[in-house]
Amino acid sequence: MDREHDRQFELVVTTQGRIVAMDSAYHVRAENRGRDVCVNSSYCGVLPARFIGRHSPKAAIGMDCGVGPAGAAIAGLWYLEALNIPTAVADVMSAHLGDGVDLYERGVVSFVNRPATDCGVVPGMAVHDAARLLLDNEPGEPTADEVDNREVMYEGPHGRAVVCTDSIAFGRPEDRDTNVLVTAGHTGRSALHYLTTVRPFGFICSDGGRGCDDSGMAALPMVESLGLAGATVDARLAMMGDGHSTYHDGVISAANRGAVAAGVRIGMSAAEAARLLVDRDPAGDGS
Image: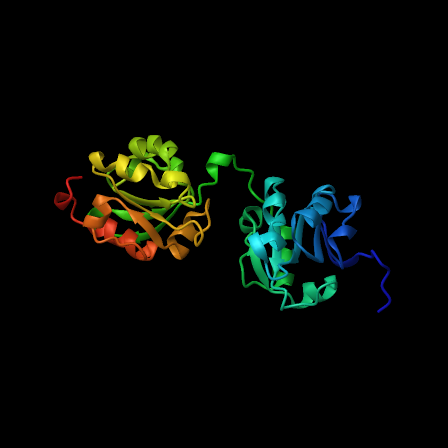
């Protein structure tokens, strides 16, 4: 097929807009603003995301290009999330780089941002199916404190549960003395206010990379006198700001006396530690 350098290939047309394929993110144009899903076979770093963002299409799909150091090849997902533009990327091994039509026809989604999730797109989905969901649906427009990604991961005894949420600041009144919160902010002294206000039955947060003088976990001993059992995970292994990553990827890096009494140990998975915290007998630790 003879293709012009920056040609867009119109694949689906509805009353809501179009799905268009292009070989590069640099080929997104003003005509795509607000109506088109731009399937572009570029990496989705911040630089391509700037070119996409300046024309604000309805949505975009790119390539993950192996993700790379510091997630640079997909960092544009979050740049575009800040603009509330639904965006996904496909596994670079599932389709040809530089060929937007092939990406549409054969690509498999590997990562998504929050607005794309709102539209129903999930990893493992075919790009052509994801593109149609992005065309047919609209993302939400939540405020920052509404995006807490809260989910019950495990229901323990006595009505207690392990609950994931992205920050201890998102703790709720119903968590007080009841739930173990698995969160993803650091556990420095600024976390102390939230821990003492929320007063969960237990908590697991990030160590924030430990920090100078272990300042990233300074609140752990500070809350012992309140009977709060808590631990941290290694920030090098679990994503900060993502409570689900703390739960699924986290490895315990430190624990206070209450958590140790419950059986939590350094090197243990966060999921296992969370269950130990929620299953413990509150009469046995003074909380």
